[in-house]
Image 1: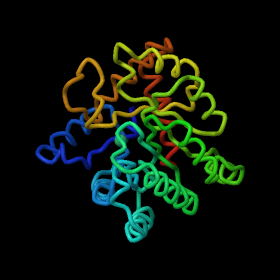
Image 2 (image 1 turned 180 degrees about the horizontal axis):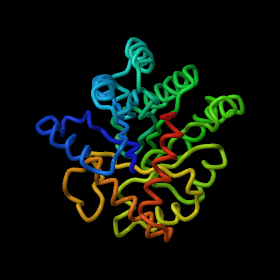
Image 3 (image 1 turned 90 degrees about the vertical axis):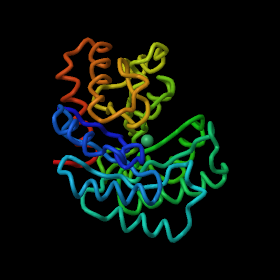
Image 4 (image 1 turned 45 degrees about the vertical axis):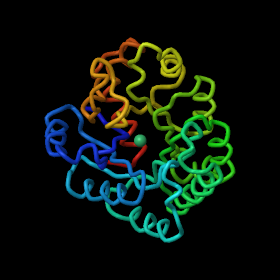
Length: 264
Ligand code: NI
């Protein structure tokens, strides 16, 4: 049983053959997929997918790239969407200083406002962090995402570092704060030394797996468009690194994700 904790089935890159991809998921070991919003339109679509497919759940939010499109009205719309059935997180939200598609101060402002929304609704937060480690952690702390009251209420901080690419030290720091780490396809690439250290360093109960479909296709399919059933390759790589059975890694990470997103 596999859980793809981060996919974008709402991406326009599936518009021509989404049903084929859906069928491939339904024939595979993947029993759950989180469809993750990155702007208003994609969040609406993620909620629709969650309604349509029993195995699909949704996260709603605005990716740092798209924060230049945010305004108060859009935030109100996100609040409404977040309350729909099978919406389990606010995300993906965060900071991206690699591309800087939106101004830094605009990214930070809407990152804060969306964390505040997740705090208010007591929902998990899915984080995108690229080249912004210090500011992401500082802002999460300042907004109370790791506060005692939130941890007491939700069981842990319910902060998911999606497609984690930081050091093992950073991963350990986050785990100490009550966060969860999600590993994507780049773990299977040749230059994955840092990610392999992360997988070895953090307790397996804090580990989730994801595809970030349609991006970041794992080996041996690198170069093709990614899709949720390819999450098996990341699970296999983790099994190899931890010297465990593939089935065991699949089950543990699936249960971790169900617990994180409060899915029975
Ligand atoms: Ni993503």
